[in-house]
Amino acid sequence: MNIINKDLKFMSDLQHGNKPNTIVLHHAASSSCSIEEIHYWHLQKGWSGCGYHFFIRKDGSVYKGREENVVGAHCKNHNTNSIGICAEGDYSKEEMPSIQKEALVEVCEYLMGKYDIKNIYGHNELGVTECPGKYYPIDEIKEKVKENIKLGGAYPEYLIKRDSHKFDWNVVKIQRHLVELGYDVGACGADGYFGEDTEKAVKEFQGDVGIEVDGVVGGITWGSLFG
Ligand SMILES: [Zn+2]
Image 1 (cartoon, protein in one colour):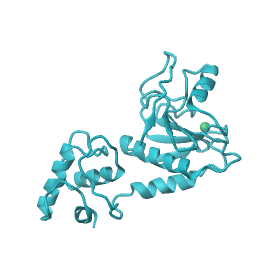
Image 2: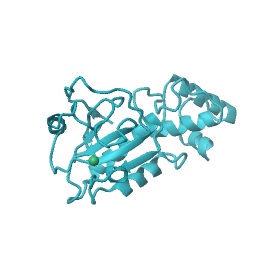
Image 3: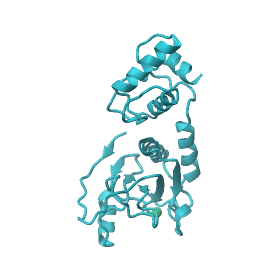
Image 4: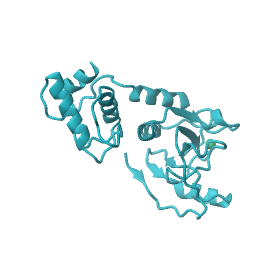
């Protein structure tokens, strides 16, 4: 997942210490807009800048808003413990393009893995507002995410191996399960990055169950883990 950073300039009164345990989904209430425009609109309101942590355009591109550890300005009473994600569009009167929906699912999964977040809400579930709009596919997004992050499931049909630079939810699944089984996946825990310690744990697991020890999770190892 590529997160585009437009280097927005925030006012100096940003508060740090956001501890995300919830994702809050919003719409921009504008059919076409950019992260720079949202940033400008929020500055005009007297805020420190873009109130959201992420902004997703209709073409599926993902933009960085505030730092994730900065308190948000998007959902009253929840700004110190949530990540706010805004979708370009006015979903009180239009349908969401599927590529934008897919990007939303991907960002939610990424954040849920990173912070061990369990809950996704539409803004209107936490406050009195129409946001994110009656056509926003909130249930579909929640269902899709839930399905994708469920432990186990079918082998994803590619070799899952050492790559410390790419977050992968399937790596989270493998790491969580290895930890449950008593293996050590390193100090970062189940972070979704397949590093040296995860490779070592996979090799130990493979040795213990008597399959080929290569540190790569293919169909046989996946089956041994989750079968
Ligand atoms: Zn909202």
